[in-house]
Picture 1 (tube, rainbow, N blue to C red):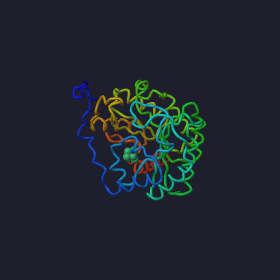
Picture 2 (picture 1 turned 90 degrees about the horizontal axis):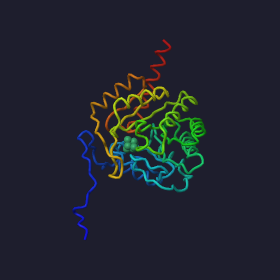
Picture 3 (picture 1 turned 120 degrees about the vertical axis):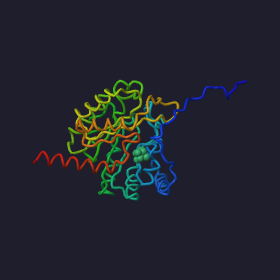
Length: 308
Ligand code: SF4
């Protein structure tokens, strides 16, 4: 007979005090949840088990995840379900626009699962969502966080940028040395190139990228990624602590202290990023609306200085 009490249990990593968050219990949280259910929308907030969900949803900030809840990749850090996704929901673009209108969003962040099964990687659905938002809520600024569109990047970027997002985000996630274990389906230089292409097609579109820290990266490797990002003319850098969603995912190698995040932030600003968010709880879409306004103001100030 098996003695279950003596079976090895997956180790639970204790989180430091600085990343404790409040339980999601507010009225606003419940309202955001209901709206997403009613419109049949998925959110990365839930699917990725984001620690900020209580705070963001209370303020009616949610990041909509289009193209279903099933991803064709299996990255070692990500909680989104992997498998063969279902049919694309044709109602989705209008539902996203309806959600933005009902929540009164000034700024919306749209992301998706990887859809390597679709001929265009899902690019046309991003285009339709941007168009629906422009028609229905023209005052809402739009930030998209896309996959790498492996094998069809040029066509995808060209089509999406032509639809006119305000911010184009694609995360590098980690340093190149860790790609084979953490992001095995992706290529570091392909991701960098994607962001460079966005700028070539539309220099006025803000580009944004982020990394999770605590996966075993070295400080100088992070600095090198910052330099690579600046060479690709990326405007906005986000750095946040990686948190292990389940014991099956990559382990946390280090809880980076808030002071170390501050130091990374200072270095990033010195390297010329227009905007930097670097705290343990920073996520791509955390405070994205406020950060967008600051970034736009920073660009205007920089241009005014150049003209003077
Ligand atoms: S940080 Fe982004 S993903 Fe997390 S809850 Fe807020 S909006 Fe959602």
